[in-house]
Structures are given as C-alpha cells and as structure tokens.
Length: 137
Image (cartoon, rainbow, N blue to C red; front, side, top):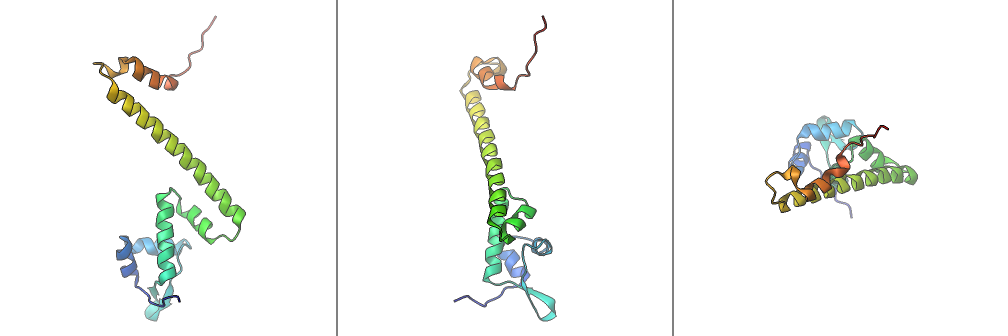
C-alpha cells in the first residue's frame, strides 16, 4: 500500500541535503512534479522522494539534467538504451583515464631517481604523450 504522507519542499531539501531552489529548478526542467496543496505549496510524496534519489544517483553517474530527464521520462526503450550506452562509453573512457593516471602515479612513487623526468621507467610511461616528429629526407 502506497503511503499518502507528504512533505514540504523544505523537508525534502533537508532530507537530501539540497537547497530548495535545486528542487524548484528540477521541477522547472520537468524532472519533478510534486502535488500542490493549499496556497499552491508543493507537497512531496514517496514517489517524489524516489525520483529525487534517482536524480541524485544519475548526477553521481555523470548524467546531465537533460539526459536524466529524458532517461526517466521516456517510454521509448530504444531512446533510453541509447542514452545509457552513450554514458556507459563515457564512463568506461573516464575509468581508463583514471587507471592510467593511477599507474603513472604508482610508477613515479617507485622511482628513486633525483630527476623524475630522467627515470627510464617513468619516461616509458609518458612516451605515448610525446608528439610524433616526422623525419625529413
């Protein structure tokens, strides 16, 4: 059975550690649609709280608000899948970049040379960043 309890915008903002203007902005973008009570005051129910949690998780995953809105409001599975695949590829790229950075830092930590840039192991790690210089005959 669904709870009919409702919360004010201030209560929801406090619960999630957000400013109230953030919830108003999300509403203006079509991400939220809380019920209205007397005096046109927003009232958030359990479904709205779940939606706020989804928006926050999407932001943590790197989604922009426009893509989040499209992802959670579309009824077209192919559109949702395309958004998710695009973000999956971006996330995989960022993970690979972070892994390469971690490997570079670990290499530098293992170096005992006075000049890090002169360390053969460190130089090998950064060789791929050297510009290609063409040889002229």
